[in-house]
Image (cartoon, rainbow, N blue to C red):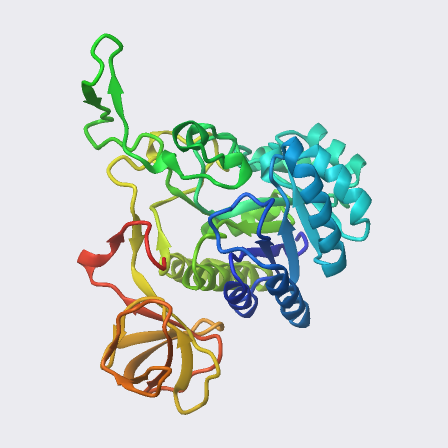
Length: 421
């Protein structure tokens, strides 16, 4: 059996990094205020990045920082300054796509591992070998690769070159994220971290000689969202991923919340550990993984390109919204065994609500909200305003970093991409 793969979890903020660490990540990947391809994520200030790296390292977890912008001339001086700051902060790896940025990082950060981003579109063993000769410690496989192709790459490159691959999360309709739609429609460049996700929009066709006459695009009369991919989910295929020689299992989602991160990290942590302990145990628990991984927010799932090129069944034609089985309420801070804790509230909840306390070990404990107190000490019947700092009492014991969630009614399970998802 191959070595145990790394579980690499996204974090778009310091609080989500801490949740990722506590819920089972071996490594987290984050971005700074600039030069990473998630400009709309909250991202990390230099102070938060230092604190996050220190917190992760104290718990034996690595930190990878994205510097995967496709740079223009005017970006070069700032990137040099940023790399110098990162050299001082000492993350474990930098994720890079641009060859020029790679050369600068090799010069300025010689003690930090360099990983080649999926944006570099590495699709063959010669490309992997090239980056290895350049000094890369790891290459992230292009999302368009099958498991058969990855296994062949593994056979042609040195064992010292690690292979990282996405195993879960949103898919892009463009070639490993190389998309011009956002820049064309809005002036916000997806290759510079500012994608507006126009692949999720509804489209129509206009015939050249009849401008202004919009013809809906139908596929088997199911709808019009022609670019809208299902989400990747490979939790039911851990053995195949390991057999292909993938060293790091990467979860997408630096723009997602603590509930999504806790859900995916905990589920994949259990799946990997169970399989490495006993393939029979993994097979026995497959239904649990499948139920758990859908307890955050998600679109219907697909296996992407791993078992061949996806067809029309990998697209969603009738909607661009997420399925949202649970609402994220926040996570417990400064908790005590009497059920009191502080929380930066993410979505509305009220006294008397039945909620769930999500534990890193796998337990989901039913709870009831007994009391809500505002920062000024006043008692509240409900907490309707996101990001309020509250003191809450439940009827069950709570520990710091327990995630709080509320199950949605069936009619409320489909929700758009807004608010604290």
